Every structure is written in C-alpha cells, then in structure tokens.
Amino acid sequence: MSVSCADQPRIAVVGGGIGGLAAAAFLGRAGLSAKVYEQARDGWVLSAENLAESCERLYGERTYTSHRADLLSVVQAAVPEGSVRLGMRCVRVEIGDDGGVADLCRRHPGGSTTRSRPRS
Image 1: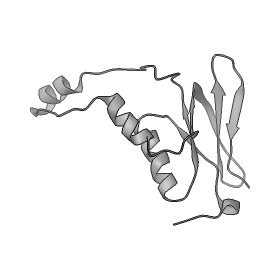
Image 2: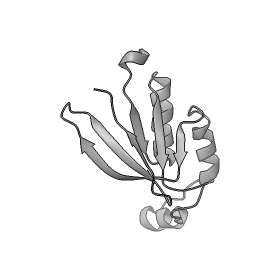
Image 3: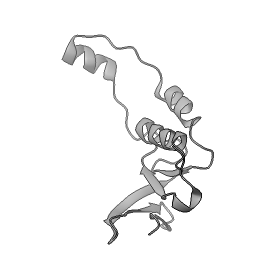
C-alpha cells in the first residue's frame, strides 16, 4: 500500500522502545512516515528488570534472551534516518474536531515544545 504525499497523515509514535521503533518501521514499510518521540536522552536506561529469573519463577520455564540494545539496533535500522527524536516527552494528547489526534511533546530540560498533528 502506498499513500501519496498530499494524502499522507502526520503520525507521531510516542516511545522509542522496541514497540515504538517496530511500529515506525512497519508504518514505513506501508508507505507512511512517522516521527518517534522518546523521553530518554542518548540511550539512557529508564528501567531494568531480570526477566529470566521472573519467568522461571512464575512459569517454570527458562527464557532465551538477547541484549535489549542489540535488538533495538536491529529494529532501529529499519526506521528511516532522522525519524527518532530523543529527549522528548509526551505531555498531552488531544482529540480534534475532525476526529484527528494531536500529540503534544515537550523537549526537556529546555522546555521548548514540538507539536505533531494530523492535517485537516
């Protein structure tokens, strides 16, 4: 499926983790461009968990893991260059009169605002 530039919606993906990058990559494969907004700056770790021990304790099964950074690198390679904006945090989502969704993101720590909104 390919969408002409005139008809293409403006898409904001909030979160540049595995899911957000995968969504942007698949949107790109469908001919749609998206900007990814990630609150972490320069690859900071926002949280960490020991999933291998948790899965074995909860489900009695061993897990096979790969390093998250390696998986992120592979997925990010499928996202067009310049599509990821680091240091951005979603502060509000609005529903417009036309039914479109507007994501408002603020760059921190400077406080300047970038707005991504579908065209009417």
